[in-house]
Amino acid sequence: RQATKDAGVIAGLNVLRIVNEPTAAAIAYGLDKSDGERQILVYDLGGGTFDVSLLSIDDGVFEVLATAGDTHLGGEDFDNRVIDHFVKLYKKKNKIDVTQDLKAMGKLKREVEKAKRTLSSQMSTRIEIESFHDGKDFSETLTRAKFEELNNDLFRKTLKPVEQVLKDANIDKKDVHDIVLVGGSTRIPKVQQLLEEFFNGKKASKNINPDEAVAYGAAIQGGILSG
Image (cartoon, rainbow, N blue to C red):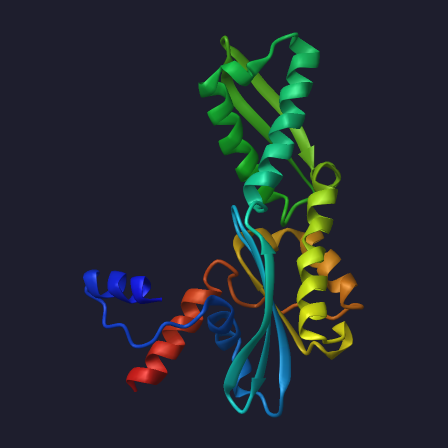
């Protein structure tokens, strides 16, 4: 925390208070304004890490009840599954292993990441790369169903830390009032679906850009503190 404060001062910022990320996300959704005690699950799935926090809020005061996660799970892992799939497909069709061609692999990584984002709102997308390898073009379709199939075990793996925080805090999942999504990877429809199914159909709060929820909440908190 001190390092964060120091960095802020060095950057010329007036550091009012260090707010932890799950709390900031909950503030972004106005959950600090709710009456009575509430339990809030913050599910933060980013590019390379995954964190779950269970908070309780009572009369505007937050308490972190439990945290769990996986420091090696995130959007990049989902991309890599798709990249591996296309590398195998290319090898099967062209008898060429492109993993040694770093330029081609870089292009494929970029396009796969783009395709993943597109599949959050569409059922299928095409990946087209001109002069992919040895002057040959690359052209393949990726469906949302295939993307989900390639990553199914990883998506399900995210539910383990969710179970863990509930167990550690000794709270039943039916007693969780709010589910807050943070991190770009929570845009993936299957991730949302699995989480909502786990909570017996309870809808996650997602009307704020998941990439910005933490910053937005911290800004609100900063505004409150500085009046």
